[in-house]
Length: 216
Image (cartoon, rainbow, N blue to C red; front, side):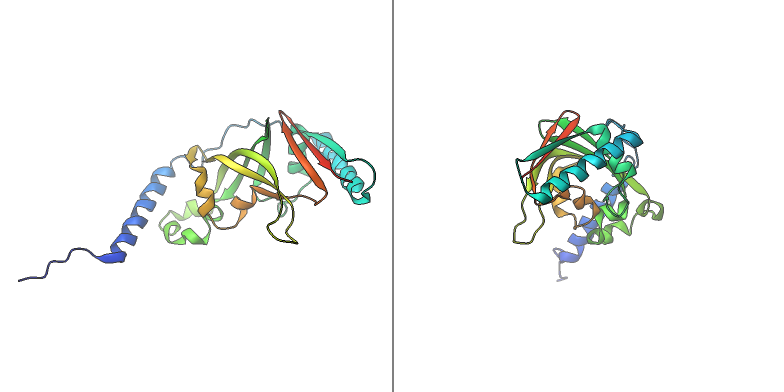
């Protein structure tokens, strides 16, 4: 009697999963290059200089470690002017980054990344099936979540301001926030973790403004 094969093993399963991922990405691709509407306030040169002066003054007061804790408040306009005019592309994980200070600890971050940098080498098996013009083309990212200070897990780790992402979009397409947990460490993950000086004691997000307090 002829031998009946009941399956093709892991190879067929892997091919099937890759096929579904590719099909999903092709469908998903219809909206990933859409630019989200700008909702944050964008300041001018004077706003950027003002934010820079405030941060320099706060850093100087923290380094002396004398007296009472000191706080500064940076407006949304000042913060976005600082990002746009006073920080280099090497310092920012996202291009054309913008921040909206929603309030009650909630922050929205928007910016651009090449599609390859979003998914990284871990998804190279899928990305190679995509059109070449997609891979290097920047996509717009939008992240929303609560900001909190995070202490390093071990001695010597830097203190960071972390965004616990609750909503995520690539272009006009919404993704589960859990996707971030399977992405490799790269610009996408760094956009949710910003290093801050150890002297920073608290960061408070209110509508349109950010208050930073340093301990003496």
